[in-house]
Length: 110
Image 1 (cartoon, one colour):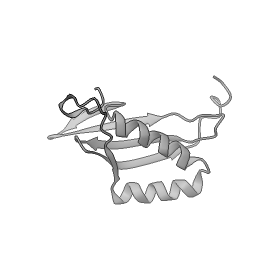
Image 2 (cartoon, rainbow, N blue to C red):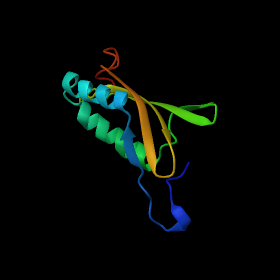
Image 3 (cartoon, rainbow, N blue to C red):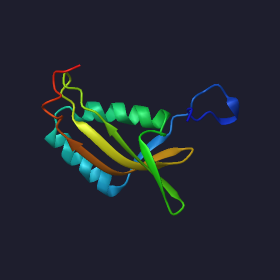
Image 4 (spheres, rainbow, N blue to C red):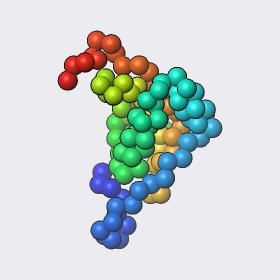
């Protein structure tokens, strides 16, 4: 999917990121648990706001849900972040967030 570009304006439209209450609570707890969570989260927001058609998707009823896993950066010490979300032309709606440490066997390999 290409970035949202209404009426061929030439300008890429960024969608807003909206967290439901459970996702907001998870995000707040992960900020305390992982020192670099906020940096990794901002990168994920940047990606999804510009091109939300990421990861795998499944149609449930009339709603298409997406599951996307952002890998850790072992050099930056960022966590793995997995999100469940939906989106429309204006917003990306985050329904669930899971953050975890990188697989120690993968750290330091590039």
